[in-house]
Image (tube, rainbow, N blue to C red; front, side, top):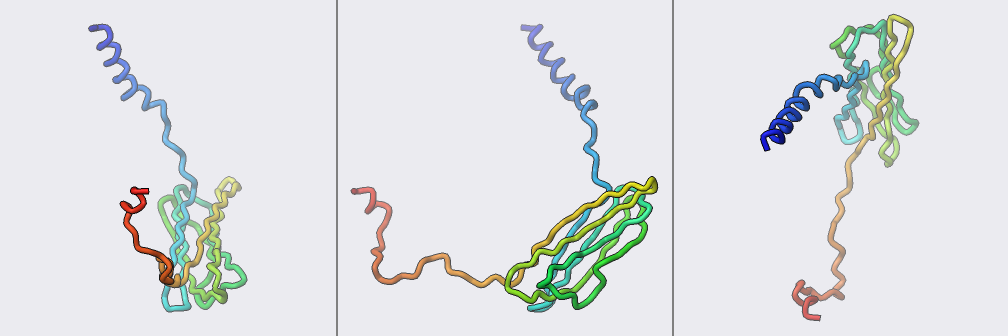
Length: 155
């Protein structure tokens, strides 16, 4: 009995301390993109693309690609510059959608490293407009009888 308890204690100690050290930290991508949407007016929407880098870069490009049914009314959808680890940059644009379909906007960050390598991350954002109110209950046409659950139970 004592050997069993001792073996159990040693397994717990090994799992808690020794095994955890062998599990390395998961590597993060060099850039983290965040898309945000703010409705300014009934037709105009502000889109914000934020990039935060986790490593030093030679340069970084931020781009917002708009579909054909979305018109740019303000801001610049592209930026290129240099960021150090931990820094972030935002680009803001204002758009108007010309169709009733919720368009998908694509944001892209291209990170160029000092050794000549590049990393690209792409995120997408579905622009959401006003959603028409819908009733969840079917219309009552007078044909339905109001019954309780107990009426079905008797049959």
